[in-house]
Image (spheres, each protein chain N blue to C red):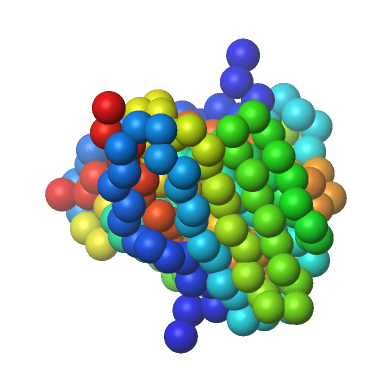
Length: 111
Length: 106
């Protein structure tokens, strides 16, 4: 079983739709992250959470929201999707300052 | 100016060649990471280092804290090493380089 599971793996949707990307982990890590990756660019941090009650904005949080439902679950929502949110999205977890563990990514296309 | 810069952006080499990918950064860091992203998209952590040198199989990572520079070396490169190699540094958060796309031809 994967340590960090993202669902769905692929999603095509229309402008204006609400979308939720889910991430769950079995590693018991306290910290969880959502990134987006655009071609030719480094990963950009959307939101991160150090604990269930600790949610922080990253560098590109506008247009996104998150929910940390439990230590193992961290969901990313696009309330009203727009085409420039088309990207590859990654969830990652980490314990303290150890290397991050990544999910396999969600490829999101917004038409 | 980006805080983490990698070079080269793209690298094509023949199987067996010695590969070097460079990473320079401009912020104070607690650690530097090298990661590998395969064509399918998955990202795997290769190394985390804060000083000196680490080796794992044919991969070697070095860091010079004073010069704010790290290198990733691949010895006896193989087509399966073809991937994007990403450098990231721990400031308060992870700051990511744009990646180096490596293609190893048989």
